[in-house]
Amino acid sequence: MKKLLLASLFAGALALPAYAADYTIIAPANPGGGWDQTARSLQTVLQQEGISGKVQVQNVPGAGGTIGLAQFASQQKGKGDALIVGGYVMVGAILTNKSPVTLKDVTPIARLTGEYEAIVVPASSPFQTMGDLVEALKKDPGAVSWGGGSAGGTDHIAVGLIAKAAGVDPKKINYIAYSGGGEALAAILGSQVSAGISGYGEFETQVKSGTLRLLAVSSAERIEGIDAPTLKESGLDVVVENWRMLAAAPGISAEQKAAINADIEKLAKSKSWQETLKTKGWADTYLAGDAFDAQLDKDIQATEGVLKDIGLVQ
Image (cartoon, rainbow, N blue to C red):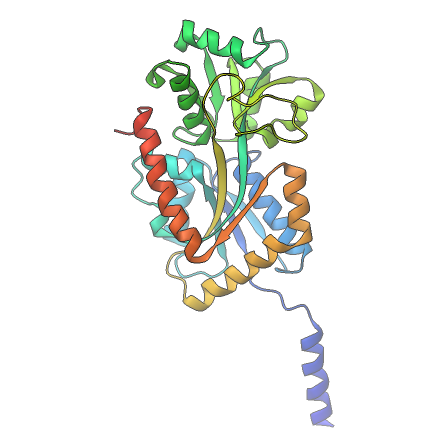
């Protein structure tokens, strides 16, 4: 009888969902921006797909993600259930803020998404085209204010490259950094800045409703479903793609890292995640393992070169 009871309990245990860790994901920015959207999309899909039973998202904003990164690295060491969202913006912020904590102080897991930049203006703006905006920039760089994400991030880099391509000294641009997508959007809609720049997904609702005018996108070719010319079509030889990644805590074991990698690979290949990418307008740039580590090193070196080129890093 006892054997039957034990066998029954064992069989019941096997029938239960084999959930992984109850993850906590740090979004190192205010709600509303790309990192927050990424973290909450991960939360939804990990739970929907039964990969994790419970996922929490915590926002730790400031300094292009470096405050959240430093807190994560110091407080989560060795924890196999802690993750942080990062990417191109964080790489730039680490360099421009001379952050003592870098991506070498955490455990990179995978690159997940890519997204091109969009340049928008309020519907009431006198700038009808990218050409109009560039003309004003050439006339008086300081009079054209740009609202975007953190200093040294993708948005800031893109504006610097636009200025350089237009023959304007990038050091003269008037760039106003916001720590969250919601703050930046409010400033753009309120005409507190001349133009806004960020991933298209952060502006899509307002562009479709007509409250924002989309002037250009930073892709090499036109993006299907988005009615806007590329910067190249507008006479500016600029292509910029923002990418986002996921990292785990420092000091985790090989077994912990393997478990996290397995969970994120399941997520990346899931139908729910693919649908999320399509809905958000994000490209699937999933890359993991040694290949991602090598690519990350290349991206860090390339970003440092660009930031020096436009005067944001000495």
